[in-house]
Length: 208
Image 1 (cartoon, helix red, strand yellow):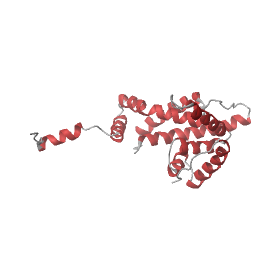
Image 2 (cartoon, rainbow, N blue to C red):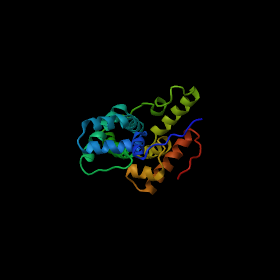
Image 3 (cartoon, helix red, strand yellow):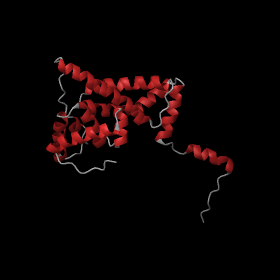
Image 4 (cartoon, one colour):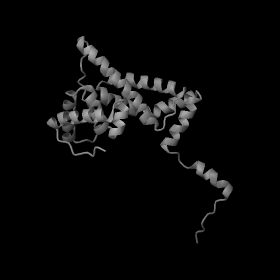
């Protein structure tokens, strides 16, 4: 007969501490260590979130070199803020907000460069390059068509569309990340969707 194991009261706290920490709990611990100028924690925080921030920046900017710059700028800014007064809740989304803000600053710089004839749009196939290695030729062909559609969009509209339909953020989050009103985010996404639908048929997605 198997007997149930009774855990003494004094040991239960130890068992609770031994349970795996959630991602949020680990991020919260790292934030506190960064605020205490723990350089090891800074590196760990970077290692945890850098791949996502880099991929996000690349999908928005469509330029790998600029995405690398945004990645570095984002974490330098984040560490500075954390050593000051910043106390983010969801760390990844907070970092994404910093990155998206820096992306939009580059959009504004591109407009000036375009006027001066200095900006050359990248021809990188962002979504096709991001496809899973096992993706079928049909899926890759659809992503290539989608890349063509996204190139035609103004930067701000493309960013809002990508944040919603590629990154999976809700409308409220898109507005917060883009630092615009909810109405503006909706207009940008709607205009982008009309252009995209000329190239490829997309499934209906809840706009909540």
